Length: 235
Image 1 (cartoon, rainbow, N blue to C red):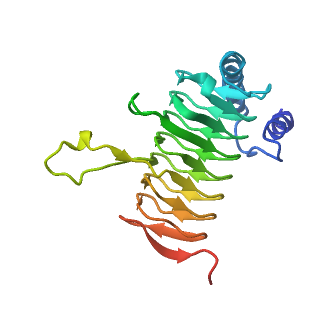
Image 2: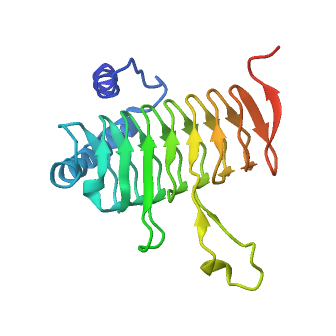
């Protein structure tokens, strides 16, 4: 049974995969049953709503709500876990690469107010986002290949203007510079990434950090606001 499961998972992911030998058989059975249900739900989502699905397998959990489905393009092996909410109303829509995983109760909100649509979200191949993430697209958001995110990460691709102290902040408009995250980054639990930030390739952002400025390639950053603590490519 384990060999068959390993073979199936490897085929879906397009890479070698082997489950831990200490996982009980009863747990594996329940996991397979759950994944079968996700696959069935995913079939109806991609078949009738998502664009450019090209017959790829999509796994959709329970109590998932997706709005503006035709604005979403998926690669193969995408997992959208239980309780996730996605509103894809935006100019460019949402692109999810191969083997992207969204954990439980994630929220992706592309547009905040209908008088000004959000731009576009791109999540490249192999990205794993843990539970309770919140991505407010507004400006463009790009997440590079093979990034991993801890739970409760926040990405805000918009910043409210507040220079006029005599005018309500909500009436002063907003700037949308967007957020760019490079490839192979580890974004720790509870990190907040603010508008206008570019995070380079191969970076690590420590848990709880607030990133309000650019991060160079290979940097390890942490703190509020986040500062470079060490460079991964230096001895």
